[in-house]
Image (cartoon, rainbow, N blue to C red; front, side, top):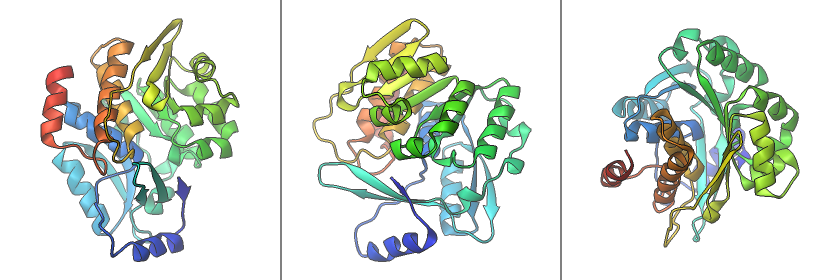
Length: 291
């Protein structure tokens, strides 16, 4: 993943204009809450968009799926876009243009936006704004929410490790893949990294791709295998969908293994399709089996 400026974003748009493109409501946290909404949850979203057509598209999709979106608007910058390039073997990389999202400030966040929720989920892509994250975490804690974070990308963690070390002491649930956990700890051992993270947070999750996921809470430690996927099409949003399944199951009082199993099920399905949306038929099958 690379953060890109306006010039680079426009270059990418121009270069790939003639290729087949698919547009979906995105952003890491939005992928997660969109999946939670499909499972039957009632999530909300705090963000900032431009005054443009992509913002209207984004807002309409939030309304369609029952997401209570608190979207501030920037009159100068366009809505952020993650341009995803997918290889033949299903791997992907992003050129992420934050646009208006990068101008969201601590003073924009209102305490009442946290009322009525149980969990506050932070995507690691926005941690560069330390004051914003600190303030949002403070308001969430005052409202009695459990605070969760996905570490987002190993290079994000590498570039801001000191702040992550501070932040994780305020976090209840942390999600990381192998590379992100290693970037934080400096250790290549997934189970050792799990324990480091679990010493800081109530629940630590370290995802190890096709080898499944490790989860630890206190002295309880479990492993859940990955869902078998015959053909990987696109790994975009795999981690986001895992978080959605895990958090939804946790909110329903399920044990750690059941939480990880639903997360793995969602993650396994989303990598079988292009983009970040599953069909309604697939959602019905998942809910029939797990919800």
